[in-house]
Amino acid sequence: MQSDYLAYDAIGLAELIRSREASARELLDIAISRTEAVNPAINAIVLKDYDAARQRASRDDASRANGANPANDGSTQAALAGVPYLIKDLGAAVAGLRMSMGSRHYRHFIPTEDAPVVALAKAAGLNIFAKTSTSELGQMPYTEPELFGACRNPWNLDHTPGGSSGGAAAAVAAGIVPLAHASDGGGSIRIPASCCGLFGLKPSRGRVPRATPTPAVGELGIDHAVSRSVRDSALLLDLLGGNADRPLGAAGTFLGASREPCKPLNIAYVTDSMLAPSLSADSRAALEDAAQLASSLGHNIEPVSLGIDFAAVRHAFLMLWSVTAEEMVLNADRITGRKPLRDEFEISTWAMAHVGRKLGERGLPSALEEQRRITERLTDLLSRYDVVLCATLAGAPIKIGEMHPTSAERMQMRAVTAMPLEALMKKLLTEASNKAFAWAGCTELFNLSGQPAMSVPLYWNARGLPIGVQFATRDGGEATLLRLAAQLEAARPWFDKRPPLIPARS
Image: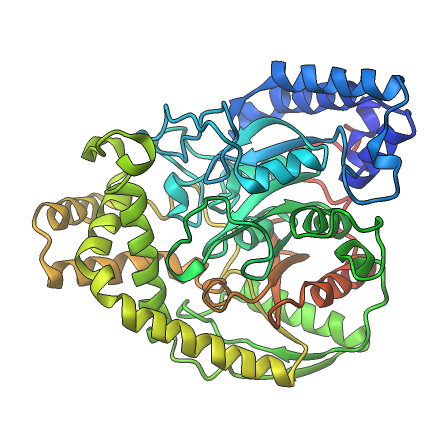
């Protein structure tokens, strides 16, 4: 079984357990063994809960031996029973396990209740055995928290796996698990999926229950996963998004949609660079390749310019983002019960929180109004087209450390938090966001609009680095995206593509 583990997605592993060709404990031990073998290189796992997971697997196997097998009742409920699973160490609380969120302040915080998305994952039978790395409080599109150190891309260890769900994507790409929890507030499912050659679907706003009970300003974020197969993400969305009691793969379910033929779609082909100043040659090549592939499959591809004021989009997103940072940093005592201290946070996170306090709250009404206009514009576009095709990232995965603040930038950040002058803060925000958006400025639009979007791994550049392309559709249209993704997956299979870190047979 050890040598065949990578040949299965999560649905395949669950089928092995149901048919008793493998036990839950056997698969968990393989996942743990793979963690111990590859994590020293990629640094994706930041907390291990092996013993508790082994006990759960053994109990499940004993129950199955005694005739109990809830996943055989024909419903989606518990359809992934016994499959090893990873939870991102941000927001999605697991009762009794530390939730550091990549931050020194939160490193001893232990939630007492499961977040709804975690409770649903457990109800699906997924066996959580570890937690994955994230940028501090999910602030950055790469995963290099000072607390745990850089997480690395299995396709090239000198490059980032993206962020903030970088640990999840690195772990899946490295073959630890075929499916892992991730979340997306500005691209944090789609960015690492693109960097690691994975499928990453951000669901519609409100599709999956919030990780936290308190709604965040602008409702930018949502939980789901990164996966090696489309059908795994489809089934998990059924389990998390309200279809758990439906028959497995039935009409009207997301898994069912992934099995249905994709009708010819009218696709708006967008080469706008969004919040980035331009797209690299790699990203343009990936886009053109995807457009040609979709056209060959019978879809109508029409070049379109979004006609959006991206400067206004950038400002609105940053205002909403900074207010969220203020809540998580300067009001952290509401969560941990301890006063937040400057040396407990990275300087860029601390500075963004102060921007939120000084500028964000005052700028909130105009930001929310701009969010409404963006949503209206995209809703209108998607009333005329079935799907939008655009870049996921402006370039290939960047190198580790490439976006770290320089010494001068760090000095400027310290200065504005000590003397929060509005002009200095605006200058700092512009310069810092220019650096981030130059690479990762193509995904935020669909967080603002709340519409579903996915990154699909169809292209690898000459250096062997994956570059995903992004598709989005109207609110509630995940089934359309899943039909299209499954069609693309069949036409250009990626499941058996493995990074150099993994031998051809492992």
